[in-house]
Amino acid sequence: MVTSITSFGRSGLYDWMMQRVTAAVLMAYTIFMIGYLLFSSDLSYASWSSLFQNTAMRIFTLLAILSMVAHAWIGLWSVSTDYIKKTSIRFAVQSVCGLLAFIYVVWGIQILWGV
Amino acid sequence: MLVSVYRYNPETDDAPYMQDIHIEIPGGKDIMVLDLLQLLKEKDPSMTFRRSCREGVCGSDGMNMNGKNGLACITALSQVVEKDKLVLRPLPGLPVIRDLVVDMTQFYRQYEKVKPFLINDTPAPAIERLQTPEDRAELDGLYECILCACCSTACPSFWWNPDKFIGPSGLLQAYRFLADTRDTARDQRLSELDDPFSVFRCHGIMNCVNVCPKGLNPTKAIGKIRNMLLQRAT
Image (cartoon, rainbow over all chains, first blue to last red; front, top):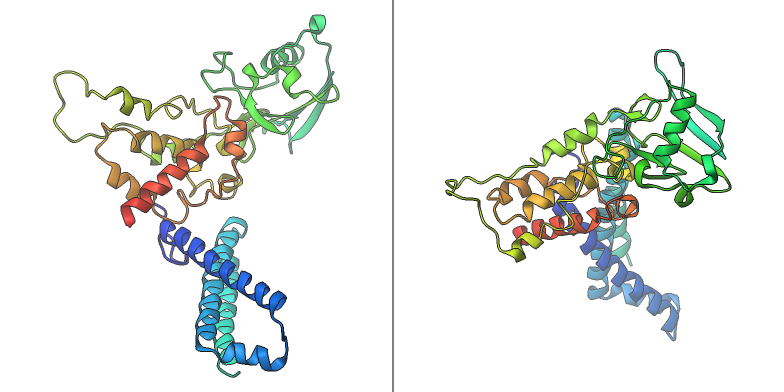
């Protein structure tokens, strides 16, 4: 067994499962957004703002943000462990990815509840 | 025809190089790549490659022929030669010992990890441990692997992490024992595999299936291991 401390869930199966579940959430969110933009009769600031004042929409969006962060971490972790051989550089890149992910979550929540 | 061969002798060469050799095939026959190599060796005895059975059973002469891994002994020139040219390289991703001979240590180390032998802690019966024909049929498409390394050395995940990712060949063998009804170590075997590298570095690009000279399907076996892990955990 290969041990790894930086992977998302320590278990390969858990990461694999999360990658698929988060992909499904992101697909649902993307389809909803495209549908909304294409078929909304009144696309104005007021309608956009009221869409995001809806609690269900905030829950859905937060779920999509968290899914994106988990999905991106698992994906970028895979890419970085493939291509960056030097541990110090890989750890630095992964740290930047982690920090950015955290910033996106906080920023996303701030935007979402600031509407 | 023109044959371009990867040459490297660590004792005399600073770096590997490609040697272009023009050669006439006697009688214009459609010979195997291994026969061609034999002709080249007659011209230049320093040309080094592995070979043994010359019929696709021993798995010694795996190499990269015009960009695709395969066994030289069962690959006819007509299958690989393009525009009267053939490029021969060693299997990609493994350290080169000399010319077309690679160091297979990393490959075998991964094979060793999957414990490629039957584990059964129940008392041995007086005769063989019997299987039904159906249970035995589960091993078809798995036991035929000859460990030529064509698949694992065609896999980018194995190139990047040959020390951590077991690779298509090793995983095919892992499933061969997971699927064996006589084996009692299924749970331990699965626990050994449930990390982010051993199995899950496979992203299903199927290079392994594309090159396997025995027509086996490691990607399918890897999918079955994944399903076993999933069933065990849910």
